[in-house]
Length: 348
Image (cartoon, rainbow, N blue to C red):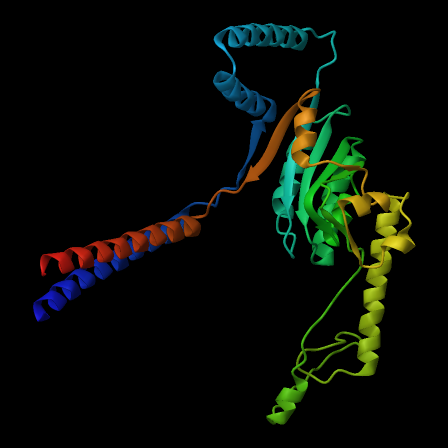
C-alpha cells in the first residue's frame, strides 16, 4: 500500500511540475508579446442568410423529394440564379434591396454596445436609402447612461434615413425598450416582455450594524448634493428627497425620449414601470406587429439580399493563455483519474 501511494505521489509531483513549467512559459510568451506587439482589434464578419436558408432548404429537399422532383427543382433554381445574375449585371435595373441583421444581447452595463457601434459603422459605410437594418434585440435594461449610448448608436441609422426594424423575441424592457423605440417598426413574439418605462434604484445601508460595533464612517463632500444616499453612513430625509427627485428627473427624460420616438403612445398610461406581454403590448401600441425574428428575417429573404453582420473580437494573449491553462488542467485531471483507475486494477 505504501508503494502505491509513493508511486501516485511521484506521478502527481511530476504532473504538477509540468503544469507549472507550462504556465510559466506561456506567461513569459504573453508578457513578451504584450511588450513588443500592439493588441490587434477584432474584425467584421458577414454571413449571407439567403444562401444559408437555401442550403437548409436543399438539404431537406434531397431527403424528401423524388429524383424527378429534385431534377425539376434544380432546373428552376438554375434558371432563377441566371435571372438574378442578369439583373445584377444590368446597370439600368435598380439593384435588389439589402437587409443587414444585427444582434444585441444586453446586460446591465450594455456591454454589447462596443460591438454594436462597430457593426453600425460597417453597415453605414455601404447601406443606401432603399436598404434596411434589422436589429434582433434582447435586454432587460440596466444603467441609464450605458443604454442611452446604445440608443444613440441606433439613432445614427435613422439620421441616415435607413429603415430600422427592431425584433424582440424574449424581452426589451426599461433600457431595452429605450433602444427599441428607435425602430421604424417594433416586432415582437406573442409572449415577449416589453415596457418597464420607469427608473429604479436600491442599495443596502449598514449604518446601524457599524454603529452597533462601534465603527464610525466619515463621509466628506464639497457640494451639498455631491452624495445623497450612502451605504455606510447615516441617511437623512433630505438626502432621500433629493435622491427621489433625481429619479423622477431621470424618469421624465425617459418618458420624453419614448414620446418623441413613438408619438402614438399614450405615455401616461404606459410609463408606469409595468411590463406587458406581446399581445398586451400590441394593444397598448408599444409594438407594431406580432412576429418572431426568424419569421421576419426569412420573409425578408424573399424580397431582399439579407446579411448578418457581426463584430468578432480577437482574443487577447491573456484569454488564449487562460484557455491553454484550462486545457492543461483538464488533461492533468484526466491523467490522474486514468492513473488512479489503472493503479487500482493492477494492484488487486
